[in-house]
Image 1 (cartoon, rainbow, N blue to C red):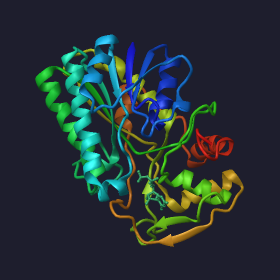
Image 2 (cartoon, protein in one colour; image 1 turned 90 degrees about the vertical axis):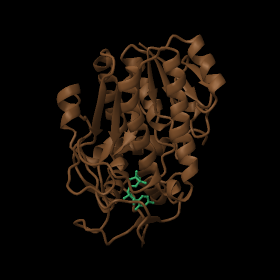
Image 3 (cartoon, rainbow, N blue to C red; image 1 turned 30 degrees about the vertical axis):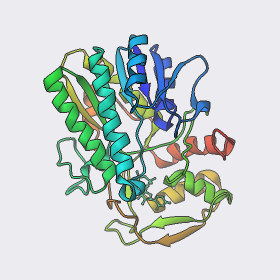
Image 4 (cartoon, rainbow, N blue to C red; image 1 turned 180 degrees about the vertical axis):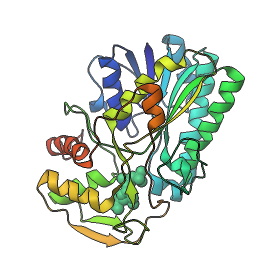
Length: 329
Ligand code: UDP
């Protein structure tokens, strides 16, 4: 299939592009390179440098390419920033996505795979999270993703759009061949910040909150390998042939890992000490989030390969050690 990958130069998108190629698909990249990296793209892949907000440019892409399916990874993803700068998130994650959907549907493209998030659930009443549980985000980032999920439901009904929504837990790790990895600017994610602190390249790691109702007082998350995420996306393609199909899947390992446990894993894998400062909670952070992903497992035959935090951190460390300053370093 010819697959338009919006955000194909970003962290998860660039890993998925490689998996698409490996599975025999033809990815076409759409990225505005605000956060994406040219160095994350494999040689020979077609790239359109286009913003999703630019309707005329999107029209040209869909007129020139005969796209079978759109995968959409192009979103801002910082929970903290979404709290302080909500409109940046609504304009990019919501408005620009509606623009993409409008243009693609007008060009007869009716298959869509969307990156959503466990942040759409807010603070869950029970864990692990199952897809049918109530969604009540506690930060604008999660709300923007939920807004798009709701629009997709309406479009499946009204326009026969077929879509799969993947609610990621914490994407982590790097490709096994070391070709791509995590490089955000600014970096706010726990694992790369812990590496940087251990190497003395960044200040001591701030642990956000030690008084959560969790076994060690720090937040628990479900760290799922970025290549495992990518494999689930591609496995969903064959489910989208029927017009109006609406699919929702959690993607996680099902294992909660606390911030302290991540730090332990980083120290074990790197052999370095992570200097730590214990600080207050970060606004917008739920105490614990981990997935029940049995639906993806049974319907898509998906099985995460990386089931331990050490195995995820190991791949991330291989990438980070080779490129401590990321793609541009
Ligand atoms: N975290 C932390 N210090 C940091 C960055 C993150 O203690 O410098 C915590 C954060 O509160 C959360 C977990 O690590 O509980 C994962 O945060 P991250 O930003 O990596 O992903 P998120 O869960 O926000 O998507």
